[in-house]
Length: 522
View 1 (tube, rainbow, N blue to C red):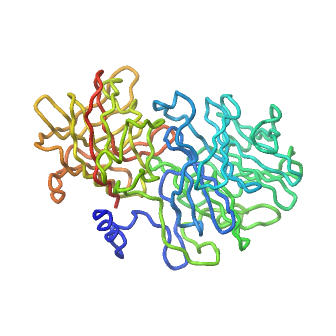
View 2 (cartoon, rainbow, N blue to C red):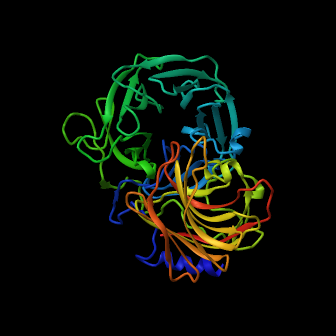
View 3 (cartoon, rainbow, N blue to C red):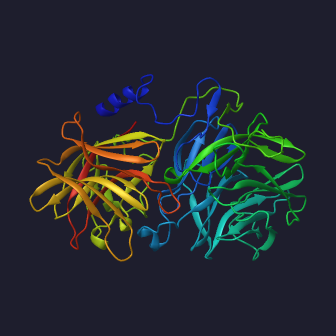
């Protein structure tokens, strides 16, 4: 408790160690992005005075974070929709699969999330409280569906719109009123050569029109399209309502349209930033001739361009400056909500009670290609939270078997780590790097330094552009660089992530472990 109080006093002191990215400018205005982290394919709703948002998780678990805000600018994580996916395949990393492009809706007193995985089909989760327990249902076992979104019409009829993987077409299904069953095979309702790679549809009804918001043109360079029709089955008119224009915001699209209690409209969307993932922006929305214009029409061409700074939404109050959680003192009964594993978590991977006030990570056996981290499920990771930031962790490593290691990692399609290692001649600290290769182990030790104790401080410094430097200290004051700098790389549909690991690369089980006293992000 004492270490938590000291750390809280530090981060709450004005100008000291605040979250590395904060969009609230403190003067009634905000800057974009509102979240400089990989909350891909966001969708958002308002219920009363509260705003909730979710985003894709892919193979990272717990999945589908639930974020809360009072003003659409300051967000914190309050829950996840599921703690694991109910399929054995996700007990190991299934890179690039898992939950894609969820839709979040509120209907008749209940919260709904719909999502697809590319190989496993359609899922729906429902809850009476978004901060409580969600009931997860596997509705249809199909392949190559993606991006579903429900709509409950004025007469109580329920529908689901979706796209397909690698497609250029949108489909509409009837659903049971409780949203638990599809009632037909679905029909094609939109296909256009002027809107290539149309996907990520979001459904709403306003002023007698059915609207489908759908990004097109591809993730890094696309635009936001809106379709509308008086008939839910079409035909649909199409209009581009947001594009890059003369800004530096590439591919501004795919997100959720939200109305505040005061009648303002806003659009939350992502921008692809390579190794940082798909970061989250907020655009003002105005309605003209029955079409939503997102951002600001700078050129007078009727198409919005993203804003970099704007007045905050008018929500009738002033609310605390917040950001999604990063640091963790490990003093509570559970991990912070910012953490995700790379696969369905298992109880024997970690403990917060074995050494109270510390996180114990066990040296989990994973001998695939000598412990190659691409195959390791017990990577405990979180999103990059800013263009530049520093992570420092205090650890105590107790390796048992040869070549066990534990430390800090930056994980993507390539990875770099600084770790304590159990060797034939005792402990050492090493800088390693690796990449996935089907035919050989690509893990390389760049530098190794002998140590006499497993107690150590590890540090990761990330510069703008994703350049990473590692260092270590035996006293927490004097840090020694190790290895050379390297650039982070994104993962399979996700940004690079930073975090902790402890792995045993041998055939035999081990009782080795690593205790983590704290993990601090500045």
